[in-house]
Length: 192
Image 1 (cartoon, rainbow, N blue to C red):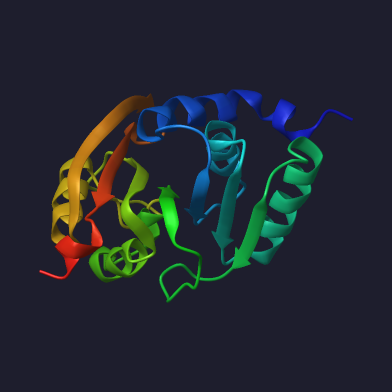
Image 2 (cartoon, helix red, strand yellow):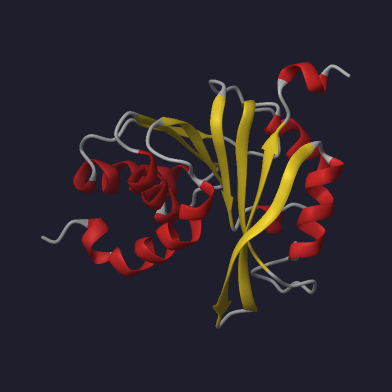
């Protein structure tokens, strides 16, 4: 049987291409929040290994079980920690070098309090990477979209620095997707 990562190679490679500009290099502790089927989790693992530790967070236990199986089959060296939780509530994770939210913020109505809580998990200068559809109107699959300009405003509002758009790609679904990134302030700056 062909391993999952080989079957999904095209989707994983697309995710790698999107994430690569925002990931400085190997190793680190990351979380993929709202990880779903794990395509972006796989891309993240590819970019930060060896020595990576990834928390895969999703409220769907079935999806997490499948992801654990896929990782065991495709990446036996991975340090994957599945966490069945709703990311809109308080999470208890190790301090993170990076936090990935790929196609997850568009399910959140009031994004600022959720993002404020999540970025507290970042180490000083840790990175938040967001992958979203560049749309201002929602639909049943993307109920509360976050276009690129809104992401930049939200990043500033929650206290991220150096927020910027790293990449854009065409999407047959809602026209375009983008990758946005912001960096956590050093601890001393947060106390001000």
